[in-house]
Length: 246
Ligand code: PEP
Image 1 (tube, rainbow, N blue to C red):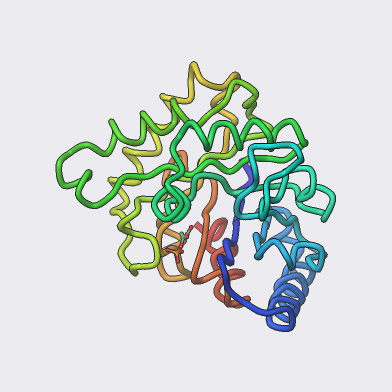
Image 2 (tube, helix red, strand yellow):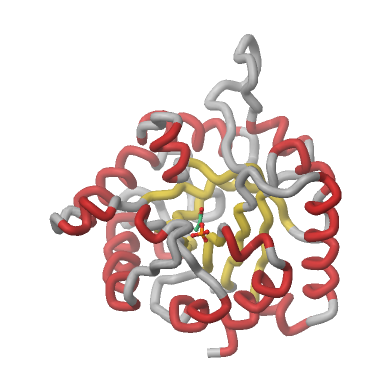
C-alpha cells in the first residue's frame, strides 16, 4: 500500500507563511519522482487557506455533520469539497477534548463527509491514564465502533491512531505498542468496513524525520498524521523519504 503522509497544520500559519510552506512542499515533491511513486501527500491547513493549496491533496481539520442551514460558524463537507479539499480529519483528540466531540458526533460528521464525496480520516487514541490502566484497546475499540458510520468503505475512510499522550509532546509510542495497536485496529475493522485490509491506518504522535523510518516500517502502519513537523517543508518531506527508505 502506498504510504499516506498527512500534515495537520492545526491553527497555524498566516496566508503568506502557508503559501510559502505549500510551495516549498510541492517543489520538493515535484523534483523527486521516486517520492511521488512511493507516497501520497496531504496537507490540512486552516479552513480559510484551503483554496490556496495547489499541487498536493488537501483537506480540512473538521466539518459539520449538517449539510447546510442555520449553523453559525460551521463549515459543511460540500464546502470543503468546493474549495478543493478531498479529505477531512475528524475526531482529532483536540476536538474530542476541547469541543466535547463524542464518537457519535464523529460518526455523524464522517457520514456527512462521505455523502459529500470526501475521505474521512477518523482519529482514535487513548489517554496516558487509560494506557497506564491497560485500557488502551478497550478505549480504541470503542472509539472505532462508535465513530465509523455505515457509509464507510476502504476508499472513503482512513483511520489515524494517535495516542493522546504522544501528540505534540515529543513522546512516541514504542514500536511494539504501535505494532500491537495497529494490528488490533486492523482486526477490529474487519466486520466494520468491507475490504478492511485495504483501509489505511496512520500513526500520529510526535512523528518526525528521526523516528519516521522505524514507525513507518511497522506492519499495518500505512502512513503518518503529522502535526508539528508538517509545518517545516524539509521535515515533512524527510518523513516521506523515510517511508520507503526502509
Ligand atoms: C496531531 O496533532 O495530529 C499530531 C500528531 O501532532 P504532533 O505530530 O505535533 O504530535
